[in-house]
Image (tube, rainbow, N blue to C red; front, side, top):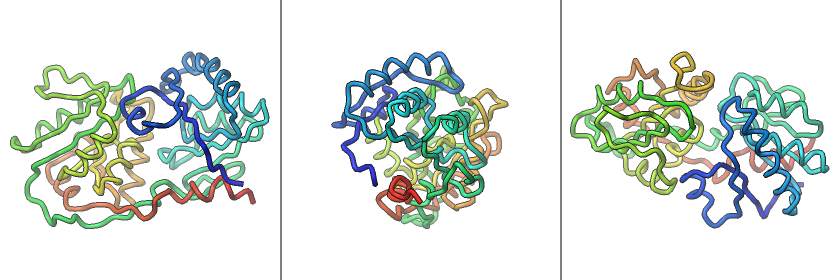
Length: 298
């Protein structure tokens, strides 16, 4: 049995989510950061209300800590639950994934065969939808338009990347800076904390190169725009994220030839030009696991 909809979404209130889910039924819930049990518990009443007020047959989530109260309450009510671990986790489940594995009856899926063992099943990766290509515009020797995106995860900046880019970008490059929670005071740039998804995707399509922190969302947005992103992972030791999972994402996409991946301190103009010389194409409308995961119970 598949899950064919209609769908109702529960997510955080951001310009991206409002843009992506325009016209959909959405419940906006309290933001939950990494290792944030207080706000996790504060979402219990919202989860109870949503599951009580709506005719919910199944709950599906991919790598989101906010899903825990929804899954716990849904399973207590006998609802079907499917948790797809984030593509960020190539070496093993996240803390949320480990917690999900303790809730009886939750279907668990890994996007990597390396660690897919009972109770985790492997049904493919969201990255399987993309293949590398050469750039349609040929080899570049200059960069006219650049998109820099640092995501919208709260509480962590990435000034190290911005400072490095300012040191290596040509002075005549037109740059769109999506800077999230990074303090840009004194950098002399006009940054945008968040940009609606449609606007950011259009800017990516028109750019010579996309430079991004190595978040799954940023990487997929660039790939869908036909770009080979230059991915720069945030480092836990530098206070840029809660752990080093972005290194796993950057490594995975580099090994698939879907990104140029480099640490912020080692980033050069040559890396940016290499990204501009390459591209990506979409192989299928939906990632493989979307059609195979929930329907395949054997």
